Amino acid sequence: MSEFCTGVCTGFSAAWAIARKDILIYYAKPNIIVSGMLFPLFMFLAFAVGRPADPATMVPGLIAITILFSSSSIEPVSIPLERRTKTFERLLSAPISLHMVVLGESMSGFLYACCIALVPLAAGMVLFQTSLPDLPALAAGILLLSFCFATMGTLFAAYPTESPGDIMSMLNLVRLPLIFVSGVFVPIGQVPFPGQVIAYLSPLTYGNDLVQAGFGKATLFHPAIDIAALCIAIGIFQSLANRLYHTFNE
Image 1 (cartoon, rainbow, N blue to C red):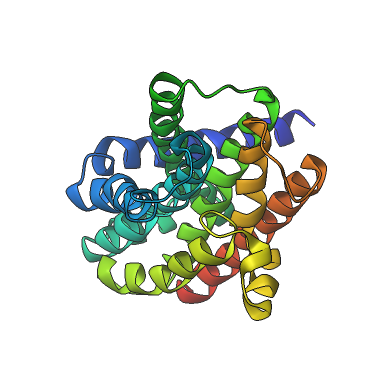
Image 2: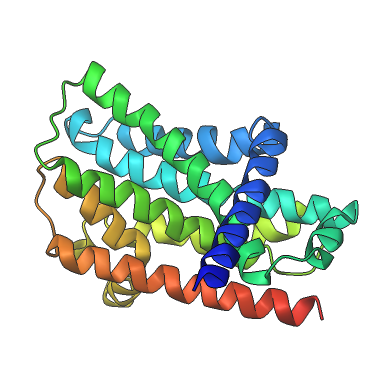
């Protein structure tokens, strides 16, 4: 039992070391700032400006898309660059479980998104006096959605390329449609039927629903359903990432 606990602690220490490395090296990279912060802001402004809706009602959606882009922007940049310098290969050859390597990469995106999500949250509270009647739902939404899309970013970064642009192009083919079918800007009921099918398969739908609940807005599902759906998505993304990294790095 003690050996098991020691192994688990060692694995998580290694995962944290990987996340810390990404924090120190990549958080201030210009392409990370653009894709993780500025792009979702401009996307939000493009839909918010000129609309009759109260800006305060759009803050939850801004938080959701900020998490979507910020959490999935670290690994698609860091891993290809480290492949180019052969740093990633040395990391894989270290005495660390592949699962912990994948977890460490996901943790860096998760922590980045959690921090960035506080910016629109604070802006909404200061500028629009938004209230948070269900803080646990908001916290669960931010944490689970951040980790979910961080694992998705790690999954896409498994593609064996040394160019971040290759992965970002594939990733945007998924991220951009999710914005329009997941109830962030357009209610799911107004989306055509094929889009509604995608919406109910999208983690962003459930994460946005939890964030909306945190702000006391009307929701589609019970928070327990949102939490369960996000946990399932995290498990799927993490399992697929583990398998792909094992396949591409044999």
